[in-house]
Amino acid sequence: MRRKFVQYDVFSPIPTKGNALAVVVDGTGLTEEQMQNFAAWTNLAETTFIFPPTVAEADYKLRIFTPSREMLFAGHPTLGSCSAWLHAGGVPKKTGLVRQECAIGIVDIDLTGKVAAFIAPPTRIGELPSSNRQAIVNALKISPDRIKGSALLENGPTWHVLELLSAEDVLSVDSSLVRWPDFTPIGLIGPHPQGSECQYEVRMLAPSSGMTEDPITGSLNSAISHWLQAQNRLNSDIVVSQGTVINRNGRVFIKPDPNRKNRTLIGGHTHIIIEGDVYL
Image (tube, rainbow, N blue to C red; front, side, top):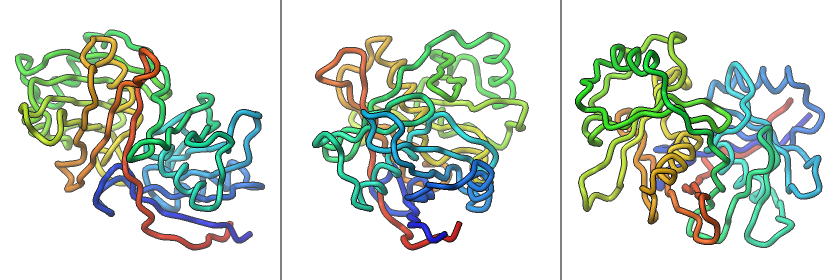
């Protein structure tokens, strides 16, 4: 069957410097095996399939696949798929707001700002077990005196996060030192000097499309935003840089929701790179 297909670049103001996403705009009739096989074939970090919604309040339903498994939620697939749905003629039931149905429930995407931004899903914040923390520190050869804090964050995916004292510390970590699958995804965050374009540098270490880290990770930044907010450290809009080490120019816009306490918005640019048809 001939289906509309779009390949996006997400979370960068510069096309091809963000995170790639494949979107099959109409997934109706596809089996789970067909979707998984196609996601393996694209060999991108994520491939998504858009379906009619199954609940009245949603505008569409989304399924998200990596080359090896289905995901409950992911950030750049949410923004890219929303853009693809709108580009294909989708009209939100409510002006300025798209409601995406996915495995974790309804995710709202706000269209009223300079860039589209999804409402960060609830995040379970816990203490990073000392054994996990020590294993990460040992593997990445991080000096303990450069660690400011750590957390175990869960918003669909589970993130083992270390906060380092500076963006320079984050950028200096050698991701090739980690051996997979000994570890689950590792998040690193550190502040840039005051007055910089971006307030934080973030890295997500885990296999992604043949690389040792993900270019730009909306779901990790989403979880981090709730962590910062829980510590009363997210009192204004911030910009996060990601992908620097692997020659990307990721920019994630994080905003505390002015209308609701304990809620954040995660925004970024989207660009169509490839558009056409796929036969599935």
